[in-house]
Amino acid sequence: MVTLGIDSGSKTTKAVLFDQTGIVKTMLVPTSANPKKSLNGLYHELYSPQVKYTVVTGYGRELLAEADKQVTEITCHAKGSLFLNPDIQGIVDIGGQDSKVIVLNQQGRVKDFLMNDKCAAGTGRFIENTMGILEIEMDDLDRTIESCKPVHISSMCTVFAESEVVSLLAKDISPGDIALGVIHSIAERTAHFAKRLTLGENIFFSGGLSNSKIIGDILESYLEIPTKTHPLGQYAGAIGAAAIGWEKCGERL
Amino acid sequence: MQHTVKKRISEKTACSDHRMSHRRRNGKVIKAIEDNGAVVVAFENCSGAKSVEELVDESNPDVYAALAEKYLNIGCSCMTPNPNRIKMLDRMIDEYQVDGVVDMILTACHTYNVETLSIKRFVNDKKEKAYMTVETDFSQSDVGQLNTRMAAFVEML
Image (cartoon, rainbow over all chains, first blue to last red; front, side, top):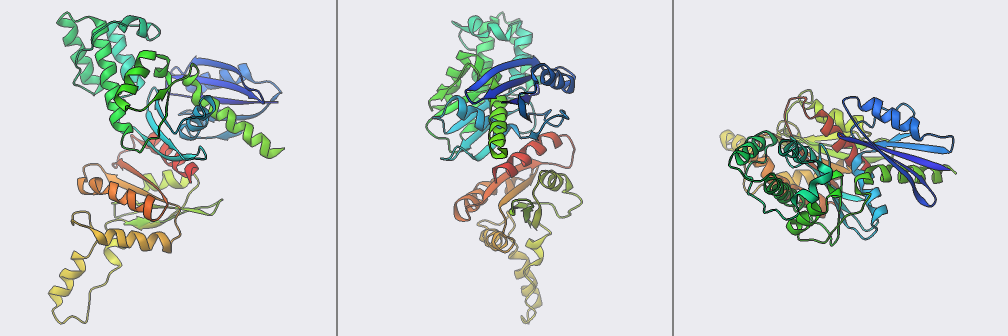
């Protein structure tokens, strides 16, 4: 028996198969301009008669007719992050459209949470847009900015920051230095946002940006709290969805 | 004003604290709460319970003083300190047996925005109920985010 968790995010769609031993398989596809197609494609790719329960989370969570349950990404991220790292008391997630801060109680349930308001400032989309202008591939990010010196970026608005980056490039400042400056500005902003809640002693950093070790380290320096990541941090929502499905199956038996 | 909400299935209640006067006008937030499994059971908004619960003292021979007193006693965030809002929330949370409080701030209503922290501390620490604040306006642009937030809030209860 296995359960399937799918996280239909604004940027990527992630799926995780789960059994009594834990994670069996993970898969990631771009969400594209047709989230329903990406979600359904991933579902049919991974579905087998062994799949007894499917939970969908993320912005596109209502788009799969075969789903047994929809759960919000807040609950799923909490569950998935705890699965990856049981010692945590809080989660900072930087996704494509949202950033979230979640505080857990002693039972590991969501006690309080915050989501960014209004716009894409301070989200993965902001980093990705800027890296596009700088012609830096997200996968090469750590290698490109390794020994760079951050420049100060004052705009937080994605659109205004773009103008600022263009001006900096025109001053012949290296793309790596600008990229690192952008990362510092997003990390500082995220840390300020996170500090509105009382965070515990260990924080888990999830979402696509957690793939970058440098971003994790810079975020930790602004949060001033030990911050952990995991190679599967980007899958935290899908892992949580699959784990919730596993619990639901247990209730059913 | 204050809304109270009952979570139908599990008999849990969430209460929503709005700044808007008309149910029709703050339908966006109420719809997001109720579509996600909770019921709004009380409103504390400016022209809700807050402004009508206390009556004018008709026994006061100075009618102007009686009127002034009634209006000055409204627990509006433009008053500092504002203990009457806390007192009313305290009563309403018990009376309507709420599970949570949603504090809705209209964009640019700075006095309510500033007051959210003291309201949160009161609801979380003194009443031990869930609390969340949202800042929104009359547009439909944040409906998706609002839905996710309210669904997660209801899951948390």
